[in-house]
Length: 376
Ligand code: ADP
Ligand code: MG
Image (cartoon, rainbow, N blue to C red; front, side, top):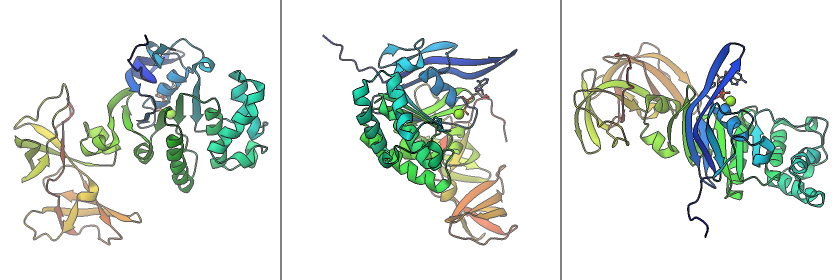
């Protein structure tokens, strides 16, 4: 009888990767463990140099892990050649063959996967149709726009009907407007491929939020936090994730009292109410009289007159109109770092204006202070 245990489509098992060039060694990935289920999309999100592409290359077989293993549907493929892994890969630079037609570019991968000659034509058409490029089969890549070239690159990856699709910043080379429409197309593609596991590498939080079932936040060659987008947004486990996903004011505070999911904290001379999420496995409870960070999202901050009883006194240090919102930076009495407020519309506030800064109630969510963090 077959085992009833369903193996994840993708497993990274404590993968480490070091690059050596001359005498210099760069640790690009450390103790990286991640499971992606069949049909699931996970975004690897992090700043440049955090090891995202290295993780993807280790899975695709383009770099050999220094330690650990990668498995596909339960099978250890750590030592298998890239072509034998049956993975579809899409990279930022498209990487199409310039002298070959769109059709030949998409057919190329099928030939190397030994798809029978008689089937290739139909498979190419099917893949091009999935990305809306069926009418362009005879063109050369240079006769296409950047967005069209990237669609062809996606079709080439899909033609082999992969169980696993890896995308490495596929929209990064496109202009902002095209990126938005391609994002919508990628969402459609996900629906059209319900059994395919996807790993989507990006440094852009809006792409991760739009596409991923779960987001894995990377920092300094490590996986820092992983959860659904909503959980990471509502209850960020770390100050880094709070700031990277959505932007955040992170105010040093002291925890005075905790009851259920709520806490009273002191910020400067004020007492504020905060959400106190239940700690995760292995995490400490919120300790009374201990420092923590209060995460206040910029769009929840309100500015009013200085007479308001609950307001903190702030001075405008900068105001930048960004179209739908105006971002106001403030120096607030009793708070070491500047506070950011995103106000709706075009708000004309002169630098130096003294205002009352109001937080919502609860003011935000508590985040543990990183171990070894500097006192303000
Ligand atoms: P990301 O995709 O998150 O920007 P990478 O995985 O490309 O990050 O890189 C992680 C680290 O490894 C960086 O410090 C980068 O400079 C280094 N690195 C990447 N590729 C190589 C390579 N082929 N040789 C040496 N160092 C590399
Ligand atoms: Mg990269």
